[in-house]
Length: 268
Image 1: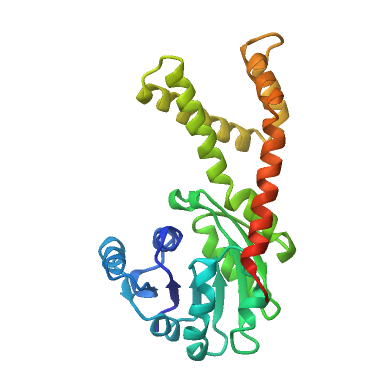
Image 2 (image 1 turned 60 degrees about the vertical axis):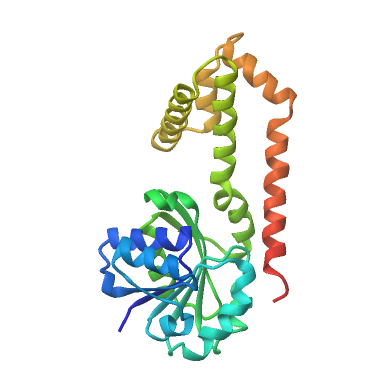
């Protein structure tokens, strides 16, 4: 009996599989379902796991089903797997914006559902995941989901009402940082640096700064002030960012991401 079925072999689906294998799961424990033949072949070759085109086939064999499809595809996938889910099967959804109530409405009564918002640093085992229980999920179900997601980095439990904000902050957050990195690299080129040198400088600066933030435990304001000498170069740069209302733009952008997460949920 396969213990785990992953429905969807996109970037996050593969990150989950590779993380679980690194955490000690075996290839015999996992089956992946994806409609793309080429993608199934890639997953089998890269990870040694079985891959199938049939969502129902994968779900029927599993104790835990992890749904990693686009939000707009959830409505098509759930009717396929609902009839084959065995009693006590846990469904873990990594689908942005889709509520546990909506999932439960398409599944057998009493099916345990846990909602998770991960992010792409899971690819390098530094992900951040927020886990929320559905109405029928037990403490053991939540603990199991936490263990699964902890194989990809860090995981916390949050009330489901927080999930749209979580999506906007940590789910979409890597894209904001990559956007800033792009801008800094381009600025280095504008100032006359070769692009490869600018990239090395920026990438390591961002990596080191993130590590300093996490490991020092200090508030980002304190760390920023440590770099900002009165009347110095950093102060001049930060003044420009304030004049261009960069912080306000981030607040507005993150609110828009939160609102879009709510829209993706659609009617229950």
